[in-house]
Image 1 (tube, rainbow, N blue to C red):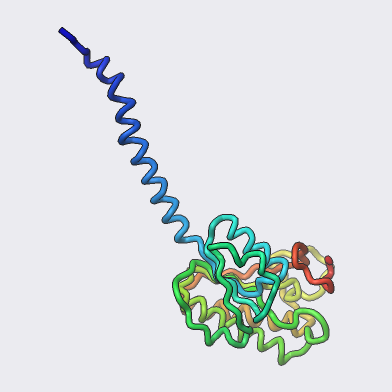
Image 2 (image 1 turned 180 degrees about the vertical axis):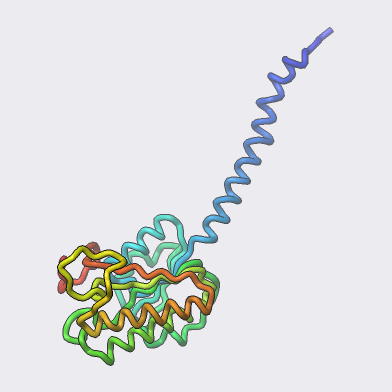
Length: 220
């Protein structure tokens, strides 16, 4: 008579339960968790042909984040991304942001685009104030895309000249129309985000360098 103790049965059955039940359940749960995480990883980005924008897109795509890049028509700077299945390019000028018909939902809106941040037009009040208006258009577009957060691009130009260490508590004292317009854009976008229940973030960038850095910048 063949007898099998409960202890022996457990030794045989446990591996089978692990193969046919535990492992498949863990696999499904992990896939479900990864899917839910990936749903939250998506961005809309403007000003994406510069060093900062290019680096953000490269990082996002390497982490399988869905990216909608809004860039000037006929730009070639983003050609290396075009075959990536997570990348989508929308071509338009800044003045056309308000006319974009949003499709789908994205988590974050990163607004880096800014006309005439270098050269003589840096002190052209009319051009710089238009950039502040475009920033408000970007917030409204973020709302259309159901974005949870809006991230703008402040500048060291907002601080002006100082011989002291700069912190976030340093008083803003711009000496250029560019710096003044950045402050106007910041305040207007912050208030609009508050009205639209969008988290507002405004990092102030100093001199950066990297791929696609323009030849006329301080660090190039």
